[in-house]
Image (cartoon, rainbow, N blue to C red; front, side):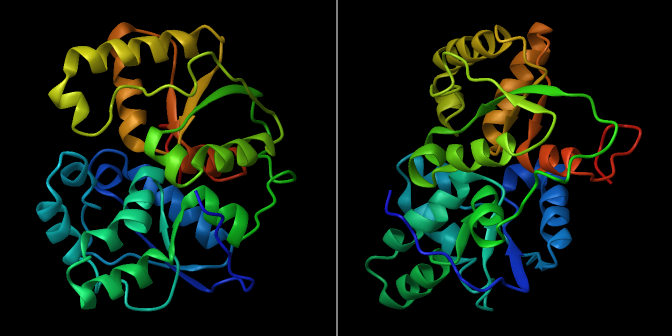
Length: 266
């Protein structure tokens, strides 16, 4: 992964690319991502016509379908504002693979490259562009928490998302991050992999779940909703004591963001 250069001037505006999984299954993560950005003084814009990043089709060997998904969104983020993505794997798809999808279409490739340069994973953006300081923002009255992190394989390789999560979580007062033996292993989700190879996927998530639970942690935190859903549903099915939470919601809650009686951020 090539080290990127970050803006030296704080932006006043940003786009949010919500991802299809956030939109359909974990909308609270998207709302909390917006709240984190707005608290830093940004105006957040959400183009309503956005959809999927195209990764499921791309990783399944269907570049034409992925290309059409990406093409439909190239003109949605017209202003030169950062595009913040609450998913390392989706951010990696947009930043590293969208330009290659259009290698035979120079006009579209130029748009894809320009857009890719503005794509940031949420944790990366908070740390390196906004330079947030959470050490003094712990919410009063919160109990101490012991957490384990999970980073999707693509996010770890392409966007360095694990490093962002580690730095953000380690800065939070009252939070202890615990590493476990299988932290670097895949959870078995892998987009369409879980559908094509359910038995293998199921065995992989059981290994991940057992390793995380063995630490005695209070919850698992991840910046990738696919993995979060996979691990969380496996834990619920087994009755395992492992609540899961998206990094955006965890950061919002632990730094003073309001949470309603149902446990949702407000």
